[in-house]
Image 1: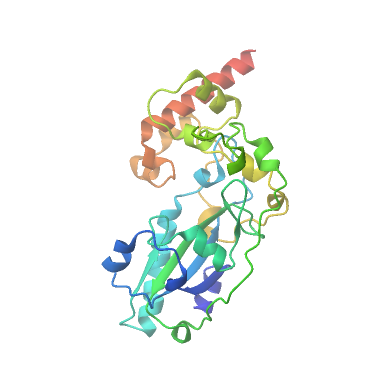
Image 2: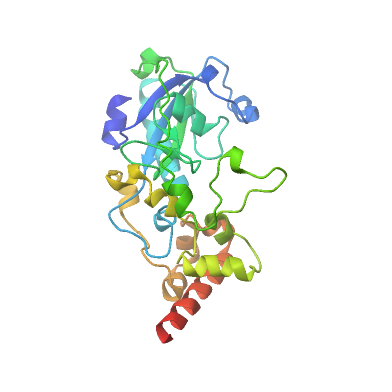
Length: 284
């Protein structure tokens, strides 16, 4: 497995027993025939390239990572089955039977920041998670189980909290009892239907038509963070999504973008709001 990861530029990975993980969707384990004795290979996929997007979050400027994980599973299948034809394994990402962030933390791949994101010391929070669950033993995988590690903590410098345009990064002690925590800008950009005037202003003035990287960009770990070594996330990047670019995407190309799951109307609404605002600013 070490050779496979090296060949695919996967630098951060770790093997842990399934029994140490927090199971959140047991039916996925049952569906795929896994017992409590299974092993989990946690994998970290950094996705930030040298091209900085203008009006999209970094994760939305690259191709959908779910497609990357699907391609990786095919490669893994060919690799593992060639050595162990009867091996049982399944790759998950996002829709997972375990709490991926918790598993990443206990396996030494990162820690939780005050903004709720997983932070890796080398790549900051610009990382996706995935895992391979298998019945192969550590010896068969050529990996050792990760021992008990000391989970690192956030610096608690307050930069993400101070920079959040919606003021939604706060500790539990600061949250008023009975009051719902504010929605972050990322969630607002993904809402369907009509937006309030306040929500429109947040989208336009912060120049984001999908997602938000503000809390990630100000994080001290981002200052010297490395760019992705994974080729998949280095090409076909949309640095600025305008009407012309959106219109030029075919149905198949649109489906490959991370924002496609919300539908064409939502992203088109945001693009129109953004372009209207920029035009007004220019006319000034």
